[in-house]
Image 1 (cartoon, rainbow, N blue to C red):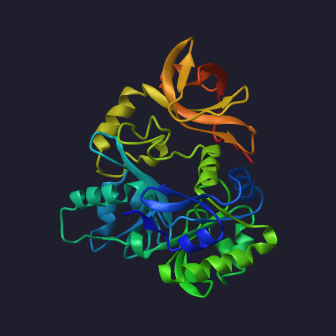
Image 2 (cartoon, rainbow, N blue to C red):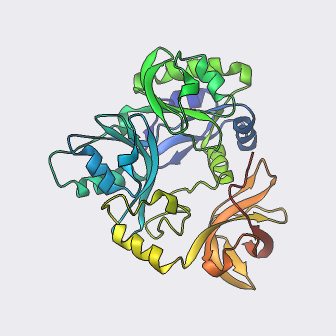
Image 3 (cartoon, rainbow, N blue to C red):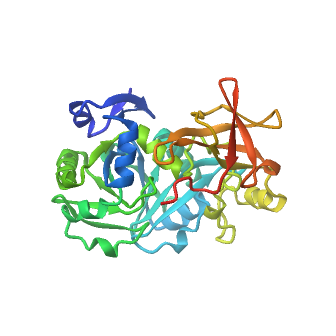
Length: 360
């Protein structure tokens, strides 16, 4: 059965175009994807991210368990700090990429919506001792994101928390819009931003307070369409497109999340081997040199031969050109290399560029 987020009725009242995504009814756009995208870059936008999954890991062995399950160094986290990481299979393929929150006695994992059931089952399969408890709080959590250069000004109107003291990739528990909740400063857009986690019964109150506080900044609600183009302008990987069980973190450009010296973890031996042998292919970012819209699965061509295919593609509202990513053999992956994208039978020239695409 397709689920509705706690904000579903609000999306309907606002006339959003609703689609099924990762098992949820989600707004893909309200007015215009392009205008929503630009609003986040120029001022502020508000997103419903309640489709994301939230797992709590508790018990005496919680930290050790999470450390073993993921590639990054959980032991380095201070209380309140947030970490981006991959979780791998023993062969080094990526199960998922997600955030780990150190909440003191417990850890919270915020996973991709399409992977909630798979991730929870995989984590349960790794649990060998009774000193660890896993709880799936996905259905009991409403998640609202406030993103854009004016995000802090909006937050300052709905909380008394000392926001300048909350650094990037940190979290805190405080009162926001009259509701005590966990909130963080991470973001998926390349802009400043905050994520508010609250019980579903307070969702409408928090949404209304945030929208009212953001009114003077011409805030708009933002759908999945603009969320995808915003993340792609930053070359942030999307699970199911750019990364999956057939890709490893090194070739995906996520080698910085792999801490081979942080003790044992699932996939470590395979990843050590990948690193020692060197990359055979690489996820590259490209910009079209002519007008066009690169889409997933379009062929990447070099010298008349297909060498790969597009994993993510869009027309960038800020750069006003087609941008995308795709895997190519390592010998074709150097910045500045000219490639071609087969767009409906026409080979459109493109250049491999240095990420991110949007550099403001």
